Image (tube, rainbow over all chains, first blue to last red; front, top):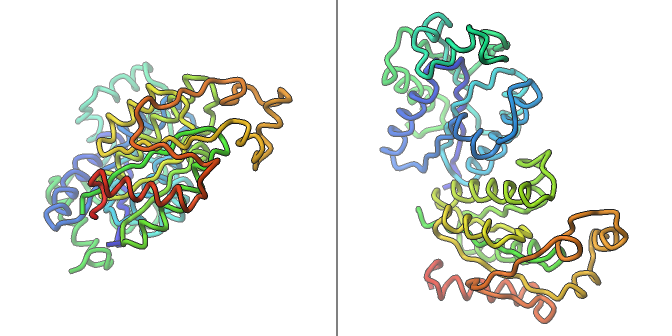
Length: 176
Length: 176
């Protein structure tokens, strides 16, 4: 029962983090697991009103997500975090805090992300209407050694999700 | 497996909320339940850095605790919240958000709480060194119809915890 874990999806806006997390959530629920998705936008609204996008505020936001993920994980929940989480140190701190932690780098070239631009944020960032936008006017630090790297410019969301499931089995996080 | 619930302990500082929550947690763990205690002070440190003690900030803090309690509860965790939570409306909002919600009013006359004063906060509040201190310089709105009222000036923590367990069985939250 206490076999919770956290899969942490990091990557640029529009890279596909939430879509893949939702697909993985469905697959895990089909296996009878308790699953919770912590989506960056939803968490910001619920835990981080008042925080902005400075490095300090982003770090604090990630710290809060990590705290909640730890609570869920230690109570047996498969927790899927979909958050840009651009700073390496903050993700490493989350890993230490949570313990059973699988980092998935959702890689996608920024030109492809900008082509998707589902919420029109890149357009506004390029126009200077949004400041401190990751990949445009704010840094993204790729993970040096994630448990898995996805390439969402080449894979469908279902393919990416299947790769995640396969890696979770390989790591022994999921029973084969 | 999805039989989570939240027991929400409200009352003055030093009324005994955390002590009783920890005692109930032990009893629930002995029954094999997944249990998490969300202590007001710990949550403030982890989710609400930067928030103060104005009504708006207290309400936001309670909203965050309620959000996390909802996540834990819907994933089958017995969640015990120990937080002053002085405002009725904020507790009612938490009840609506969480669903399976048992409100426990940890009642204790303020003179008795002031006599305990385990952290020396009442002394400082009376001396004017802490402003907006519940019961001294800030209001506490008692619950009009909690599922249970404890009287910690007359009961030992173990007795209070046993009353909580008994009420949980009565309400059908715990299997008899």
